[in-house]
Image (cartoon, rainbow, N blue to C red; front, side, top):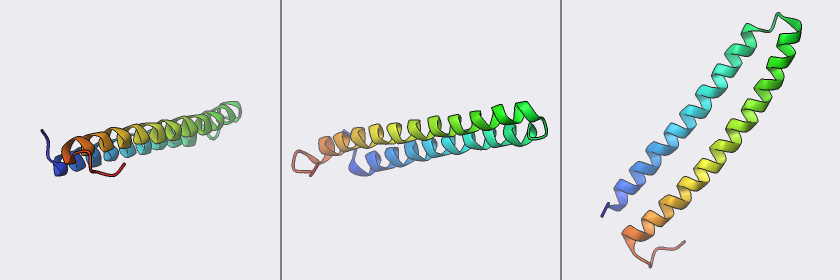
Length: 86
């Protein structure tokens, strides 16, 4: 059975991975948008895609973080017993 600190460490690592993936995805989209800013039609399409990808990545980040928090709470209850508050 894992200890409480192991659960905390695993949650922290997973959250850092999620935030890094979110940041990397947004940086890649910004690089693509800046590369196509001088082409009129492509620039508009790219800007729309940047907004769509940003929203999609942010929604995915929030949902995955929430799921990770729920899983971590369940693991903490398992480690600490039923007396741990929800």
